[in-house]
Image (tube, rainbow, N blue to C red):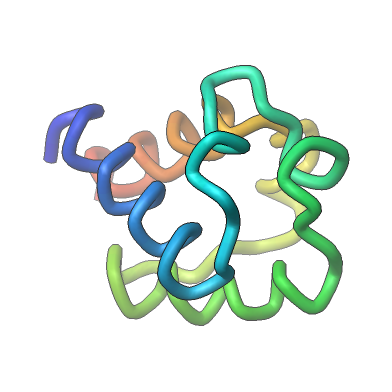
Length: 82
């Protein structure tokens, strides 16, 4: 799966499932501060990522993943190395 395909899928579920405004989604957007994603949203994200990409997010692996770009890179690494 290409980086662009992953970014498109992530962007779509952020807009559709978490109702994040499209203009808040940009590479350096911070997940919590800029996009307003809270701990309950992260629970939803774990479920969505498992459904869409087929793997489970672990809290340890998410350390340091604080921007949209880093989140997409994390997913890309998991999808393309499995």
